Image 1 (tube, rainbow, N blue to C red):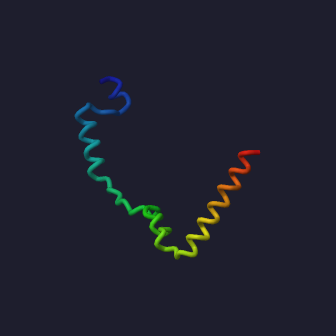
Image 2 (image 1 turned 90 degrees about the horizontal axis):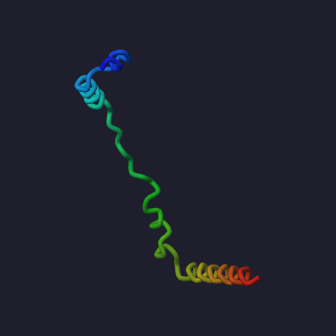
Image 3 (image 1 turned 60 degrees about the vertical axis):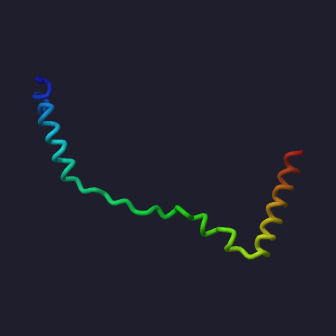
Length: 73
C-alpha cells in the first residue's frame, strides 16, 4: 500500500473504478470490410472463354516441362 501511495496509485477498488470509467468513455472503432477478401472471384474460371483457358493450360504445361528439364540437369 505504501508503494502505491508513493507512486500516486490508488487502492484496488479505486483503480478498478478508474479503469471502468476510462473504458466507458473510449470511442469504439468500427471495423470496415477488408477489401482483399473474395479476390479469387475476380479471377474465376467462368470469366475466361475456352480459347483463353486452352492458352493458359498450354503455358502451364510448357512451364512444367521447362522445370522438369532444369531439374534433370
